[in-house]
Image: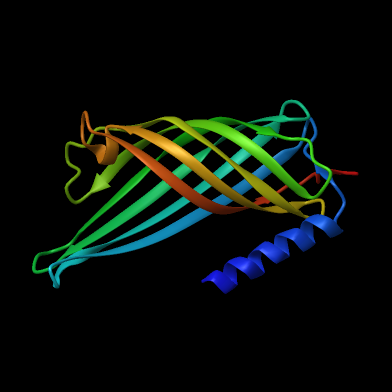
Length: 194
């Protein structure tokens, strides 16, 4: 794992030092997709208690209203599968909109750092969600960087903090999540290169 991190770090440095600087200017249109997968297996004192699998997929469109600020909106889909040992498993899905604002910092390379804030809603369906409440993400704040690939695409790395109200569809339950993500953006009209 350490070797992969070192190789990845070297790639970012090389990409950042060999390309022209990128700037997302007013009028830039962006389409982004991101995904995450997690698998957890539970045990206690050597006894298997089951597992949980979660898949998240998000799609988003953004428009730069200034040379630094972009407004975004999109959809989020999440699917959870639980397989407790010795009983039937459950499957739940959630789906909803998200909206936000992103600030891109000025840079002299093709690595563009950013910060963002979002809010979102998730509605639930599936086993165990007959009376589920809608989850509200407020706030969702994060930061990251995009590594530009030419003038029309980027690979995005993001870390964020998300506070959820009615977490998991359970009324009056709150959660605080720290998330790390990876995504790809496409800029149909390109971005300004210096």
